[in-house]
Image 1: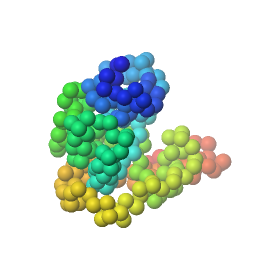
Image 2 (image 1 turned 180 degrees about the vertical axis):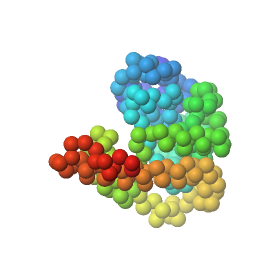
Image 3 (image 1 turned 90 degrees about the vertical axis):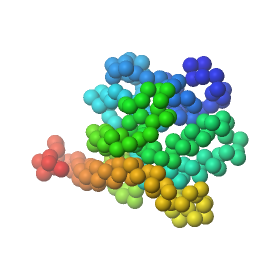
Image 4 (image 1 turned 120 degrees about the vertical axis):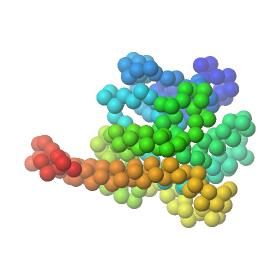
Length: 244
């Protein structure tokens, strides 16, 4: 198999020619890579998402780019608790070394890593890349060029407007099932104090704060644009929205 002999036969990889979920490819070195945007369109015309890390080169003239972000400390704790719970189930089929590697990767500045790893390391070195200040700056610059950034929040109007212009429908997004995670944090007993996760994710917290500022501006724009487009008298973008 092109995905390696260690992949279980019943692994759910969805549509492999479209995208390559993290749970399908254990080794980053087995992930397909395109050398140009033309090669991407030719080889994977149905490509719809990146998983685990952002692929370069970016093809922003050919494709729309979107990102779903999450508060880094909450994400890191949730990720670790999820992996820890998975260890004792029949679904846990990762070798111990890979399990520990994935745990370490998810604990520290994962967002910064995911947005920059493919740019700064080849497939053999990605997992060992430790993000630094330079990577955080590149991550923020990259997010500033994305077409859509979302954090599933309490602003359902914003979420619905963004999804509308992404072409994904008009239904209001349901709240995240784990949106109240903080209320259960004490009960779930994170392996480390919250302050440790804050320190481990210092870069991600900065990148996330920047993403939140972008989201705030985008939300106002998309909500007003959607309202304007819903009024029959407008046949083009209103002039008063041009500078938002």
